[in-house]
Length: 259
Image 1 (cartoon, rainbow, N blue to C red):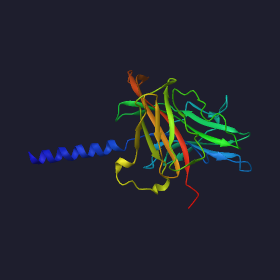
Image 2 (image 1 turned 120 degrees about the vertical axis):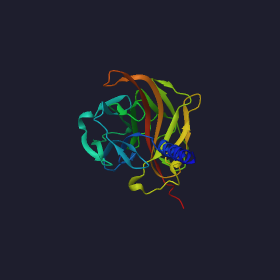
Image 3 (image 1 turned 180 degrees about the vertical axis):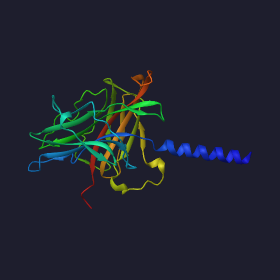
Image 4 (image 1 turned 45 degrees about the horizontal axis):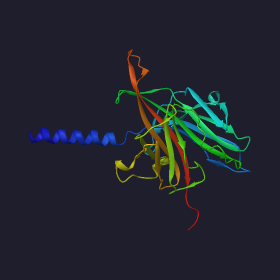
């Protein structure tokens, strides 16, 4: 009896450990979040799907949509994508030349990703901002994604430790009580978490859909606000399956330059 109890306890611990670190993140990562006068105007962008802190990749099929928004103007960039590898998995890359001052929101809408372990699809609608040549207006303009984080804090020119706030929207309406998973893009695994609970930070939105977080480390941080839509996507078995919509936003934070 003791043997079976011990085995069952071990299995529970294994499953608990596995559940701690299952956060997925869509990722659109520019090589910079700010481009100043005189800087190289050519941006390199990577689109991927991964566990950013653990540096574990997953395949990202060619997105349904990929574009850039500046003010009210949208540019379709889907045909500029070239297949590449990120963390040994299918990903996409492109170059974009900044031609005028402004705030550029780069965004993509992925193909639904089937996650058999959770019996649901994952759809992470993802964006990041780049401020160009002194442009300042419009950083809180919505792109119009089904699942979207609208920043309440200017999403560039931020120091590590600054408080960042955003409002989570689904179908255009604020989402109260949504889980927002937060992870650090941890290139080459330079940072080691004390234990698995530290891999994904989690905050909830308030009654107005607003969340607050203060990243402790310079670098890129991803915010993924999760909403489930029942029977959202048709599965090849002929049945509609639930979909986890992630409103994902990537924001770069810089270390304090003083001593």
